[in-house]
Image 1 (spheres, rainbow, N blue to C red):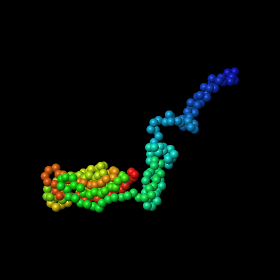
Image 2 (image 1 turned 135 degrees about the vertical axis):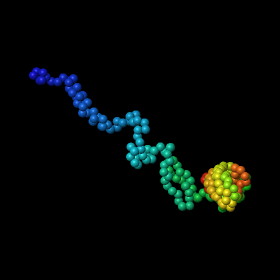
Image 3 (image 1 turned 90 degrees about the vertical axis):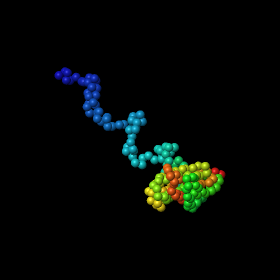
Image 4 (image 1 turned 45 degrees about the vertical axis):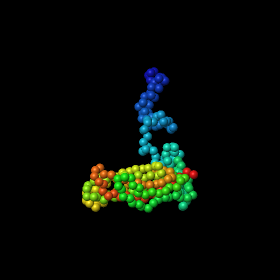
Length: 222
């Protein structure tokens, strides 16, 4: 009876509390994290996936605009044109539309060497972006052949060259066509398209190319 009336010692109280926590408190501690307690060191690398980010939560405030291009905002008045777009998507405008230069479609017959199809003069003091879409037409001469047509778009000293292979089936008079889209940028000078044809063996059939050039001024160097 004297033993039962004695107060429990501090060691027994502490042991009892520890036992209670181990039996009932661990589960609670495992799912409850104090506010502001998780730092970057506690998160495993690559552990946060896109599904864990609330849609619309990441905007320009948190984005690194030195690495990302923000969506373009703003517009230019009628008769003017966008000159530049900065890193955060803001535009500046030119008061006038950029100058354009070009030719109508011209056609040239190829003969195995480089043949000029069309050209346009690009005034000094600016740089240009040019487009051309030569269309090559091969007329079969009665022998099945693989005809390679190579075209070069030049903007002053800058060029782009592309080739296509056009097969003929050997039926005399049959025609096959294929386009060769190209683009190039460069300084002022002459914009031109020149093409040539070749076959592995024998004589090439009749080959013609039709093309125009469209060039737009991209910047002023004055």
